[in-house]
Image (cartoon, rainbow, N blue to C red; front, side):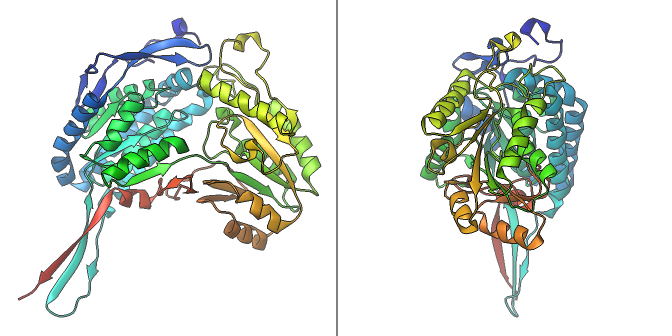
Length: 490
């Protein structure tokens, strides 16, 4: 869908920043074009917030905090449920907007609004569960704890699911009584502006605030003294930068960062389900732009050749790059030219280091896709753990396949990377499954499954894949602190 073909009501009507319950022009008057990566053409201009805009938004959130923290939990929950209803009602148009702005397929993006709504409803139900404890101190004392909200929370979200991340990451801090400032991704800010149009009025002024901007905006949000916690969904370098900035103010962080995730197949795996899981786990639908993608596939030598051949045959039938706004498309484009060039660089380095290209490895030849940032689903085999492709996150549609025979050596290789977000184990033996789950160094493990998230199950990584857990009750507690009260009785 080209810019002139976009239906009315899809693009946001505002081009401003939203904070304090109102729309504001960026104080420096700066706007930047945001593009449709399927055609490398301008969609609209988005406001660029600088440090002064961040300060104004944070102060609006701080002003709103006392009243919001004092709002009855069930009333906070009611507003979260109202926001969820609005998201569900606008799911299709929001999916189209994200497809236009980040290149993911519209048919799959429709689930993003529903998943975000599920999260809002989940935390709405937990708003009354921010509880303390009574502690036995013996006669003459009453000792108890209460959970208090932190204050203003800054949340920086990623471009691969901008609407979903922005909406669902509002839920836990709001349910706990905090106010929130969300920073949109640089590459795909439009659905966050539209989100502000849809749900900004649901909450009291200053409770939810939305900014667009570049690195300066995120830096200012992380270092602002009134921001009591900063969170990020993004890459490791950005996470390190945010953490360094937050450290100057002794500010806690919650980071969901990159992944170089392993899928491990044992000899007894169900091969039909395994082949399907390997293709699904790479998240080719998003062109591999997913932190949870199982991009390293370890196949036991007894099944390696058969499984690799079957995956290579299935992949181009299931995922062929296409125009993201076409409902038939099962694989979209990369988000930007920079991301495309990064993927091409990984292909070159893999070939230079001796990996075998099984399929893909280039831009599609379809003339309809020539102007966009499309790349074929790609598989490399004959991989070694020391190769760049085996160690670094691509965030693109490249899967690397390894052959293994010795289980101890396998787990040494699987755990050798700096990441530890997700992992996937394939076996029909229960003892093997539990043993493997213990040996893999990740925060989230699927057994005979890949890619699915379940509201209520903690998601997050170890090592350089992040700090903290989300999508669960623990996320709610991330936005509180414990206050102890000791009363001496007469």
